[in-house]
Image (tube, rainbow, N blue to C red; front, side, top):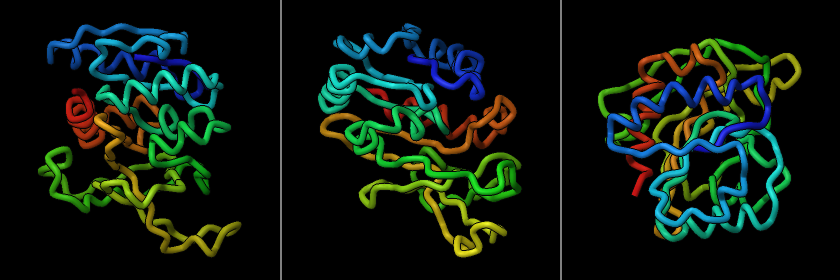
Length: 206
């Protein structure tokens, strides 16, 4: 579990919410605020990353990419995974998406499930009042849920734009899971959000 970056996403408090769940599912959890941990991920089943913005060295991202390519899972939510290391395109290629904007800040919006994948089984939709992520996404993602934007006074042309909100993807032998909701601790306590993330963590783990 790596955490850090912009403190507004409460990386410590947010990740602490999931440690009991991981331990209940027989994970040994190691927590790190040093990205040099990516230089040696041998024996690691899953990297849960919560680092918004921040910087990563070429050696660190190479270590993470090699581990995922070899079978280590990579998972996270919101800015902790798709607004990390904005200047590193190799990292964004692996995650399958990059945060671009959240027009209007906190807005009412709906997340619609569009897949019968077990990660979203039993969930059809849910409503949130929080940041709605506008992302640039890879067409090879397996999209599990989407969100559609309303018009915005400054960006009227985005009305009706539908964005992926939850997706999975393969990377070599590894699995990548992304959930874009999760700005606040309250978001992570929404039952549907918590369930999707917990299932996604287990799916991504080798």
